[in-house]
Image (cartoon, rainbow, N blue to C red):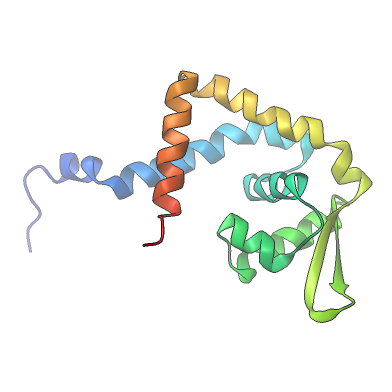
Length: 146
């Protein structure tokens, strides 16, 4: 099967290509701000969730972040090893693991929250454009149930 004459141009018009590129750029933009606080981009997302509501179960965090257990568990283990979170079995249901912030995790809260403003500046977009983009991506990632 031969490819269309303008295959390169057609690929760039695909939404998949744009979303993948934007996700990669977003992760790369965060790196210089997260390295000094020893967080990866996915760990940063976990910490933001915990700052809004902790303690949480692994399942609750996974659902909030759109991550399955196989993805979030290693992230949480590394955060625990670094001293930022604690994990313990729920005494009422041994199948559940509860994740909470440690004093070390709480100590970097202001720095973690500050990353968002740095990213807004780095994006070089207006506040309105950023809000519209965020809302569009949220609606795409979490479509309303009929």
